[in-house]
Each structure stands twice: as C-alpha cells, then as structure tokens.
Image 1 (tube, one colour):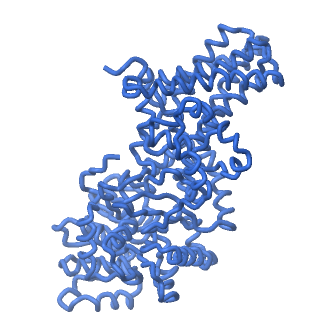
Image 2 (cartoon, one colour; image 1 turned 45 degrees about the horizontal axis):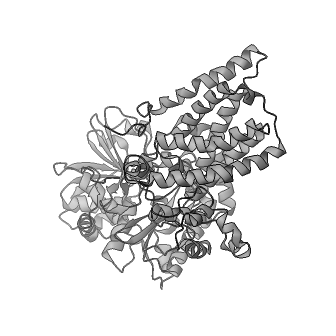
Image 3 (spheres, helix red, strand yellow; image 1 turned 90 degrees about the vertical axis):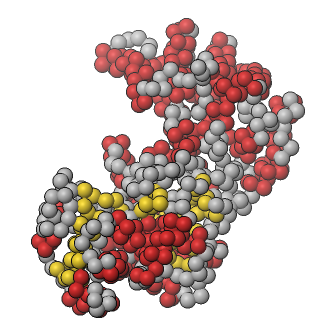
Length: 627
C-alpha cells in the first residue's frame, strides 16, 4: 500500500476531475441568472484565479520549449521525454485542491467575502509574513521532506522528473501540496486578520508565488548575472533557475523557497550556485548538433501540434481536436506574420548515442509550397538553413517531404550544385523512404498500381519492384518519362513496367502505392480489400471503409534515444518519418556523400540494412521504446 496522501483521490477520474469545479461554476451561474443580491463573487474569483494560475504554468512551459529562444540558456541540456510528459500529465491537481481548501476558508472566515479591492498597507504586512514565516517554514519543511521516509514515499515523485519545467512545479503529492497551501495561506490570512487584506493582494500574491515557482523550474536562465554584480545583496533575496536546478541535480543543497538567504543561514548553499549562474546567464551554453532534420508545417491546425504551444498535445499523434478550433484564426495570423518576417528556427531536439539531433523548421506550411510565387522564398530559407548548418559544423542535414520537392529544388540537388564545397552532407532521405515502402509490400504480391510513378520515389520503387518480377502499373500521361524509366531496367525486366493513363486500369489490383494525391472518387476504382501504401504529403483521405490505409513511410527510432517527447504529425510515439530516419542513418554511418537528386536503386538495400543495424525498426515491429 502507498503511504497516506501520496496519491490523488481523483487520479482515476481522468478529465472528469474538472467536474470538481462544478459547485463553484453552479454557484456563479445561479447568482448570475437569478440576480440574487448575495455576495458570492468569491466563487468567481476562485475560478478566475485557477484559470490564471493554470495559464501561467502553461505560458512558462511554452517559453521553456521555445528552443529557438532558449537554446543558449538551457541549464539541463537533456530533452523532456514521453515518460516525463506522462508523469506530469496531471500537474494541475494542486489547483483543484487549493480551490477546495479556499472554498472552506471562505466559509470559515466570512469576512473574506467582503474584502476591498486594494489596501496598500496590506502589502507591507504580507511581505513581512512571507519573509518572516513562510520562507523559513518552507525551508525547514523542505529539508524534512528530504529525510529518508518522506523523500522515498512523497518528495521523490517531484524529483523524478529529470528536466525541470513549469509543470514540474505543480507535480507533487497531495501531502506536499497541503503543506504548500498552508505556507501560501499564512501571509494571505494573516494580512486579512490584521485588517489589511484585499482582493488585489490575494491575486497578486498567488500569481507572483506561482510565477517564481515556474521561474525556478523553467530550466532556462533568464536572470542576468549583471544584476547580482551590481547589487550583490539581491542574490540572497531571489533565487534563479540555475539555483533551483542545482537542487534537482544535487538534492542536498539549495532548499529555499525563493530566498537563498535561508540556505546561507542553514549552511545548505551549493557552492557552485553563483559561478554556474554567471556562466549560464551569458547565453553561450548552446551546442552544435551533429544532425539536423529540416522540417515544415503541414496545415494551419497542425501548426499547433508543437511542444511550445501545448506540450501534452504534441506528445500524442496529431488529430483534429475541438479545442483547436478557437485558436485556428490566431494560428493563421501567426503563420502569415512568419511568412513575412520569420526565419528557419529550432523546433525540437533529442540525443542519440551522445549525438545531438535537432529539428529545424522552415516557417512555411503545406499550401504555401504549391504557390508558384512562393517557391523562391522557400528555397531561400532552405538554402540559408543549409549554409548555416555548414557554417556551425553540422555533419548531416536531411530535408523533409516538401523541402525536397523535385519541382522546387530537385531533391536538394539545386543547393549542392550551387555550393559544391559544402562540408555538411545534404540528404533527402528518399532512399530509406523507398526501402520502407518496398519492405511493406508482401512477397506474394505480383502486381501494384503506382501513382506519382515518374517522381524520384516512384521511379526507384518501379525499378526495384520490376527486378522482383512484380508487374508495376505506372500511372502517367508522359510516355517519354515512362520510356526513360523503362530503359533503365534490364531488358528482361522491362516488360514488368506498364504505362497506364486511367485509374480504371487498377480496378483489379489490390496493392496501390500512392505518390500523388488522389481524390475519394479516384479511390473508388480500387477493389474491395485494397491496401493503400503512400508517400504523398498531405496523406490521402481514408475514404474507403472496405480498404486499409498505410501511414506515411516511417520507422521506429532506436531504443536508446534520449529526450524524445513529441510526435511527428500523425505518427505514434517513438516513430519518425523515413526522410528523418534516413538522415539519422546517414549521420550514424558517417557517410561522406550527399544524397540528393535521383535515388540510387542499388543503395536501397544498403540503406535499409544500415538502418536495421543501428536499431531502427519497421513500424510494424513491436515497439520497445520505454518512454
């Protein structure tokens, strides 16, 4: 059995836990619609405070995951993995608890319902009570929670998150939050009992309390060391993210709430606190990645599928959710602003075998790639990203689906030809993409229907399959391009490549490989039981209930990936697109050639075997990733 108050009583309710706010909402609605002349506005204040405090944590979490702003000031360099995201999923339990406690306090002390909006004298009293009682009390209690029994049964849960974030601040056991609620209540109740309480004071204190807690757990050093150099006494009055991160890494020091003065008095100050803070606040803590995946957005709604927008949402495969609809116009405006002003930015990162892998994002989404007048600007962004990667010492940069579009830049060949002295290896990842699709096709299949047949991927797939003596129905209106591909096949295999110009030609073929977007009407020509393999972005609509649909070509990452806590678009956890995985393999193998332009069919098996050697697995394989 777990220790008392070590688990939340509503932990099995899921999202239904928010029904515990129901009585407060009902009270507010009752007053609003019945126009009662009773002062029950404290219910509304509690709901507003819970919302503001929740959004404060979310905002800090978003800032902490804006790696394009924080990469050089991150304290712990590891990424937040799925295990930590799941562990902190219910970080806001403390808001429900404190709302319930506050409700009881308002009934026990009715005078709190009639506080003035503001009382300046109360600020002095509140600060005195906070510094004189709450700070030392928290320090003593916190040290006690690091004793063997209390730490093992309670406080270790808070410390189990390897990378502090704002959500970590709220992630603790009920016992700890009961103690914390008491420490918060002392200045508020004390000031009110002295006759100096006010509504503004309660709002200000609670929001500042949470602001400082989130600051300490942000894992980003934003407090300039020049401030402490100019006013040395301030370093004892206010802690920093570095200061509290040292407590999470070296659990025997830096116990204070917000004021390091009490660690000095208790002889628990970490001697590295000031030096480390000065080093990190200089903004030179960034590292050069070994591998970069150059990604792009897909559509407006999916642009919200980022850790710096909603961390928990980004940790799950993307699906359209109702809560995204009100934010769609905001997302669209941001995208348009980025179209005009933004540059390629750092989106996310993880580590693999000591190597830093980053995802950079071109500030464009799907529809913009199909606007003829936008091509030049997109290529400029991609070129600048490649040159920057080359300048800082990146070894491999891999291009995502639309960033390597053949009509846009010839699969990256444009940039390699323009800059022949590049040290960074540019990779389109199409070789592994082809290998993934080909290995999804069962050995017994003897006929396939291929759209996008004359594209780089379509060509490679057709040539590889004809060697296996699989008949390939290549949908194309260009006889010249078809003949060109057919001539690449050996004479004994050329007859396996067949040009077709209508979808009706595939009405008896149950294996479709889709490289060009097809409408539901075009899908209707497929016989019942057809499986649609695809390498088209965006993916085709799942229109046929009597058919099955494959995801975009992808692979499971190796088990020893560290700090991966986001999903790529609609893919499951621990799975990345094949073009991403292809760059990863290129980096791990240390290959020195570029992979641009046409796919070398001879290398498809080489790349596939290299991927398997390094621990990447087909999506159909049983996942072994723990987090």
